[in-house]
Amino acid sequence: MAKINDNGVLREANCSEELMAMRDSLDVLGGKWKLMILRFLTNRTHQVIHFKKMQREIDGISAKMLSKELKELETNLLITRSEQNTKPATVVYAITEYGKSVLPVTETLVNWGLAHREKNYRID
Image (cartoon, rainbow, N blue to C red):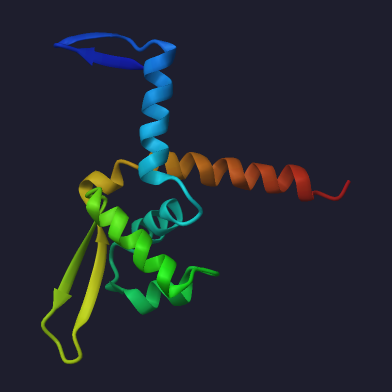
């Protein structure tokens, strides 16, 4: 079970508290694209990432959906959006330190997905 800080005292979370925490996590990270966007930004911290680059390289995401998901990730402090003083104006996105706290979740999903592909697509 997970641990919860209850007025400075660590205790085990009960099932109801764990389910509420799961719902909160899914509210922030749920959907098809948010974790993929965070993983994309995590894997490219050394690059300058702008909207068009993400749209080109994240297969299947529309401009409208990317815009919506980026706004939600920014609202939840997982990414930053910086307007560059260039002509034409350029907007650069980056993952925040808080956003990097999602890395273990994405790492677990990547590893599970790789194992799942191997299990389900292996020809015996």
